[in-house]
Image (cartoon, rainbow over all chains, first blue to last red):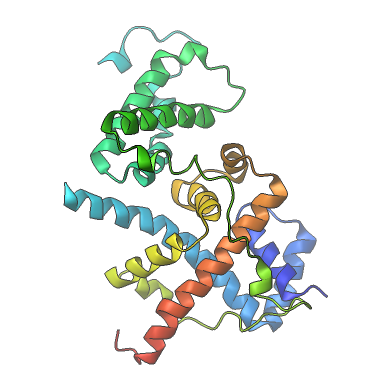
Length: 66
Length: 205
C-alpha cells in the first residue's frame, strides 16, 4: 500500500508524463479511499489551469499600462 | 516582406513552422520583460533571426530549444541597452535555492499528510475574480527562485518536461521532485490565502 506522499508524487508526475497502468491503478484505488489525495489530484489540475490563466491575466494587465 | 521572400529552399525553415512556436516564445519573453510590446518585438526579432540563420540550424537540439536560445540573446540585448542590469535574465542567474525544504513540511515520516488538502469551494469561480489573481501571484512569487523558474517554464511558458530539464540543467529525478514541491506549496498557499478565507466569509465573496 503506497503512502499519500508517494501517491501525490505520482499524481504530480502524471501531469507531465504518461504513467504506467499499475501506477494509474495505484492512484485510482488510493484516491477512492483518501479524500485528501483526491483533493490534491483535482487541485493540482486546477493549479495548472490557473497558471495558464495567469499569463493571460498578466498580458491584460501589462496591456493596460501601455 | 522578408519572411515570404524567394529563398524557400528545402533546407530553409518555413515561416509557418517557426510561427508555431510563437506563443511559447511570447510567454517566455513576457514573463521576463514584463512588457507586451517589448515581448512582441523580441519574439519578432527572434523569428526573423531564426529564419535568416535557418541554414545553421542542425536540428540536434530541437527547433524550440534553438529558438529559445536566440530569444535569450534578444532579451539579454534588451537589458544591456536599457541598462537595467540588475534584473538581467531572471531565468538564468538562479542556480540553487537557499531555503531548500522538502515534502517533510507536508507529510509525516510515515508518508501521511500533515493537515492536507481540504475540499475547495467552487475553484472555477475564483478564476473570474481579480483578487484571486493577486493571491495567485503572491503564492507563485513565494516559491524559492529555482523552483519558481522550473514551474514557470513548464506551466506558464508551456515547455515539455524534457525541455525544462535542458533549460535548467536539472536531472529527470530532480525535475519530478521540484515540480511536485512547487505544486504542494502553491496548493497550500492558495488554500490558506484564498479558499479557506472565502469559507470564512460564508459565500460572501
